[in-house]
Image (cartoon, rainbow, N blue to C red):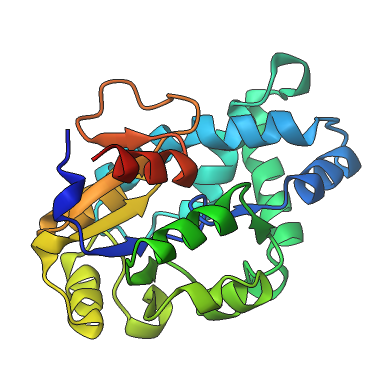
Length: 240
């Protein structure tokens, strides 16, 4: 197990770490497309889709032809409950339709808009423990706005958006940039994220410690430190 006593600075992802997608909106769009599905079931399917997305990102490497959004939404649809599933032939066009509806003008700002339960409280606890906190996110240039709109911006010092710095996770350079901007050493820093091959391996390649958020134990025997959510991570620090 990780030695949490050594950690002096926290870096966090945004999507599925601080903020979730608007599953009610996705449910409404699916209903309009003839697929009735409860928001809770979509949320569960989204989490179940993460390991497959992670593996595909790792497999694709730097392939410029790989469409992360298209693959992710196709994988999400495949993980819906049996009664909501569609034919194999309809999954890809349905995913493309969702992307058009959920990303107006290509922006993720409206979709990623719900603060995950317990986030404010966990960040307040980390703040009270004296941890400087910063953000590293693969985004489309809107992560600063997302944090402001969800009233989370005040918890963080540096906010590193991949679109702004022109480097994406898992490239270690984005983590190294963040460490330099925050003025801290890699061995004293912990990164928290939700995609193993992007967040965990990326942070580790820059010399940082890393924790994977795994709310439903979907990741099998992936070799890394895991917690269910930020509240559970607070507990890990309190145990030390």
